[in-house]
Image (cartoon, rainbow, N blue to C red):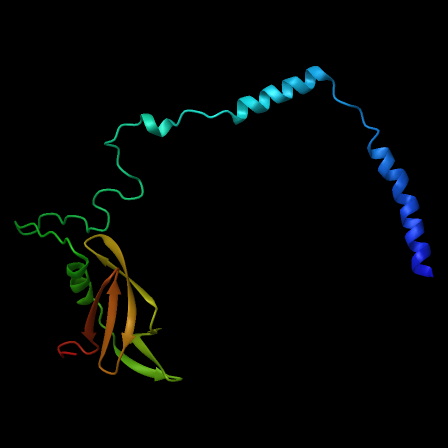
Length: 163
């Protein structure tokens, strides 16, 4: 019974509000025409500015030389260019010397003095003035694997020993 009364009161309140909404002014014809002309102008097809650009422009999403290491300067009379990720990774791997390995909660950790790194952690190594980020992909008892982009290499934990 109470819900029926509440429904009747709600409808009685909505009827005057609904009828008052429709009593707004109608926009005059000149203003309406101006609005429609502006809409047509904004929605009209425009010429593509990229179609008139010269074809020899560099693609910003794939610049030439992307992914290659910078050319090293001359040192000792010879210039050494590192061109592939594999060569860069081999040079970087020589700089990574962990002090050991430990198991913690069945997870291997690679020790670098006070720093402890697990599988998936990254190391930033500076090589020939460029910072490279390598990812630790696997840690075993006597060796570990690191990855740079798509290249991967296995290194011994103790230097001088083969994995």
